[in-house]
Length: 451
Image: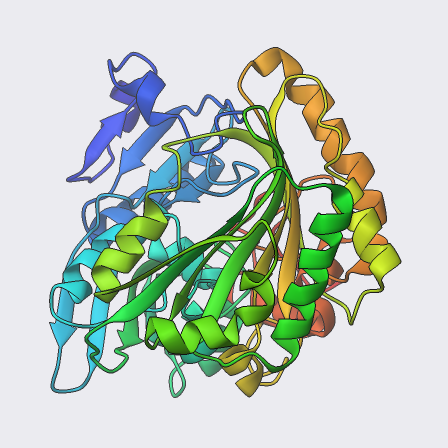
């Protein structure tokens, strides 16, 4: 600890000789195993400033961690310092101005509990332990995005510690170029976000949570369900959104599972979803309940951690039955050691399309949904086989889709800036050069400086 003697810090410093180091170095994707020099748990923005200045003074690489959910583990690393903001969890609501301000460590579940008990929904994510800072910086997909927009469409202001260790504000009037860039470029590119201010959606009483399950499906049935899904999303009521997983699991074999929210009553939703409900194998459940209870049910399907490889890309037009059959066939055979393989559709459209692709850094707003491919394993000896399985299938998925979702990062991605940011790359590089001229904030897929 002598190394840290000149660190002015109120939070906790965890080093390899600390009893909690092994637990604290873990991230959500347990296939990522990294060994940092230390983890600095900040409890205030002053801690963040001190931690950053310390790393710069000592010329030590660092990563920024909020919830630790980056799929490629870019919030951790070997032989570096982790500046961790997960213990910064203050929430302050201002119902007069219809805003809520949070610190950077607040997780989805904590925001939902806080606002839900006060009668508010919120356009957050579905996984309970994802931090809203990382969620929002990458765009912020969730089951409410078709009605309220992405997470970034509800943000009013960021507080950011910049490369000088100075706290700056980014909103539509102050550092507006940085405000633009922070909305969709992913975390860790321009500074350390310490707080976020969101506008509040209107209060409401109840929503409908729905689940539709199709057991023991064959490839033709899966392709048919995909076809119904894509046709629904051409004109779908923006009050509805869902996630549809076409999967092959160790326990169930081939099956399909939908989970979603509707800001309305079950009977109206059943009419909207009739094309899915009339299929012979459909097992549907509808519950009209409070938003908070509905989101708790959504959160309950997520494990505490996983070992997995995945990537998410954007829909690119109407697919033929042949295309969809090929898409379904991607998960017909799992690889060795895989316990779960899936192609998953995440609904977009609605309010997401209300903004243009250049209004924020989130470029692919005109897509109707994200398509991801995933494999999950338990025994680490099968990691490479599973990664190769995903890579091989991505070769076909890339033919059908475009871009790549920065919140579902994929480390082997070639030309990653173009894939993540599309036509916004040049502008993002200009913002990078202005707000991080020495490339202090970097990681394997960070935004590059202007050449």
